[in-house]
Amino acid sequence: MNKKKACVLGAGNSAHVTAGLIASQPDWECHVFAPWQNEAELWQEGIAQGGIRLCYGADDDNQRVRGTPKKVSKFAKDVVPGCQILIMCLPALAYDLNIRAAAAYVDEGALIGTICASNGFDWCIDDAMSKVGRAKDSYGIFALQNLPWACRINKFGEEVSVMGTKPFMELVVRPEQRAQETSDTLTQLIRVKT
Image (cartoon, rainbow, N blue to C red; front, side, top):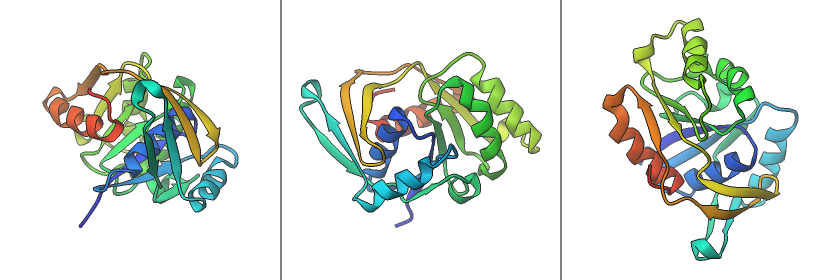
């Protein structure tokens, strides 16, 4: 079976949850782009220990989810090609640097978005993609309104506490014809209705 592929950009709290959830899906393969300092190496050490454990709180029935990303790298060329969706789990100030590093490797038709939107994120993506010769109709863009969970890393690359999950998230998508597809995909991947 050919698995679909997703790439998480970032290595913080929300990136750990997003990567763990995606990697727990049997029909998805998760890659992580973590270019800052030694985060990729630390994450690889966690993967060697069995992947990411997500420990939910009482409001979420104390669920435990485990997911092991397939690839983690500080180089976009190692993890972005072949991915149908790229999810930025980053503060707004890191969007530009990360999407510029990834833009040349984004597949035709891929969705690019953020787990927590800020003003102008779409301009940042469009600018980075245009600089590598990509037209706006060659990819989709999405954004969630804010973080779907309250979460904290307990042990980098290994364990995260998910202290609360929101019941749903508002979502914006461009082009609007891809709204249902994007909503269905994100709802499956992050386990929050979008």
